[in-house]
Image (cartoon, rainbow, N blue to C red):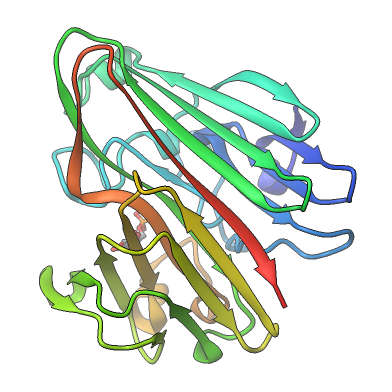
Length: 281
Ligand code: BG6
């Protein structure tokens, strides 16, 4: 454990081909991931991100659980991303597994259930980033949840970036009060704020970043049926204290999740979902 970006306590991993990964213990939050030697992180972290014990870190991969966005009685995106009780369950040179169990504070929340979340973060031999999330109902009553891995992908310029693979998918447009529409475009481009929950979607989604001349491939398991595409654009960025005004140009969020249809778990039942991210030129 060391002090990494923004002074958060972090776990750093490096594999034999020089890929690197840094995860903050606060929120079990992946901060940086570099697939190759001397490469910059593919993930965006805001230069104004806050790393205090009560903060949600702006960038990297926040875990939204047990509630995505405002879809329930909890605070936005649930309590996991701000939680300091994540423990390291296992670690070796290329993977780390975090674990979070219900505590006095989660039991006092609007989601008072008995649970265990395990989150495995791994560098593959090829330098890809693989994450796996498991949720177990360790209590005696059924519960439901929604969740997402809210990945901030760094791009050279949002205006020459597109998200592909969602044509034909239904989506809820959060900017139109959740109106349900169908994606008509092969390539979703950005000329203003975009905030949409697509689902169900194919397992592969691609970000084309023309200015970096690269494609970021996201592969998700079918238990993450949905995907959010979000960029705050100008006005919303100006309202966010932990994001510089022009930083919206340098990232896009593609967030794999189980959102439109909450997951229901019976006592002792488990749910598992994963995503793998790779970069191609
Ligand atoms: C996205 C939501 O997942 O997260 C957006 O779709 C939201 O509506 C964004 O603005 C950021 O949320 P937060 O709580 O980290 O500011």
